[in-house]
Image (tube, rainbow, N blue to C red; front, side, top):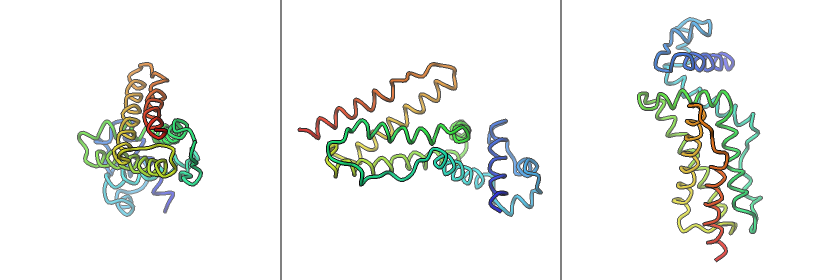
Length: 202
């Protein structure tokens, strides 16, 4: 059962990559997998449900391939370098979103999000997951005395959205054939760290 569901997910990803998610029908998916349409409906009730399952499956798989586990907040100690911590956090996230299948999925979803509600919901969910993870990290940094934020939630939101925007920009540059500036993310993290490290030492 699990392998069949994965086959359906991957077939849908392949079809969407070829012609766009909006053109993919349940019949096409069934044909691609080699099952009847009725059998497909035994696994998923709609294409949107398949897309949601695709997001869950690919994100989990990319995390496992990238060996990205739960952050070790207990390992954070006063005096640790804020820039190093933030850089490591961003690098872990990059490994997840840069996985080839995950990257292909994001390309599809990003192209569909303005016309497809399910695609927009996935982008919102991914952004909120990123913001939530950043908030958890920033609260740990505050408690450990590594950084000092006037408002942890606002600082975390600002950092997460900044990273998100830079990744989107890098993606657009790469896809359009432009040159991605290697120092862009590093400069952002360095400036962010400079501001909050200074406050922590005041």
